[in-house]
Image 1 (cartoon, rainbow, N blue to C red):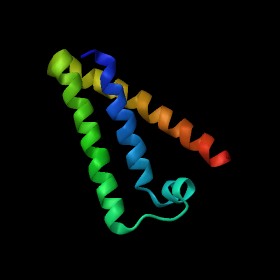
Image 2: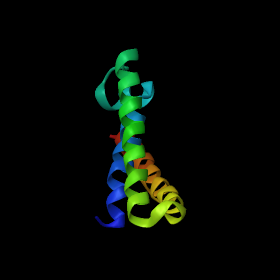
Image 3: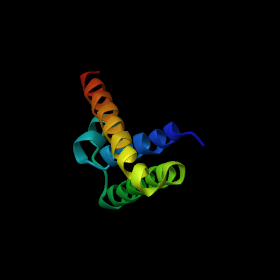
Image 4: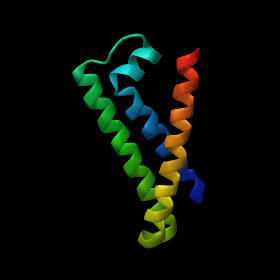
Length: 90
């Protein structure tokens, strides 16, 4: 497993967390999420971020893994923000 593979679950996690917000869900799906769906999306998003952390720690150990995971989170969050901004203009 390469170190960059942890970016994919981080990216998916932030994407799912963004969908758990009323505004983004409404913009992308067309309606606001129900409370139950919002809770499920938050759990799945958090789980994907935890999976990303586990992947980085498995590759690099705790000391370097957590720090590099924070870097991956930064990149993933930036990509999700840019994608949401682009989608809102469409």
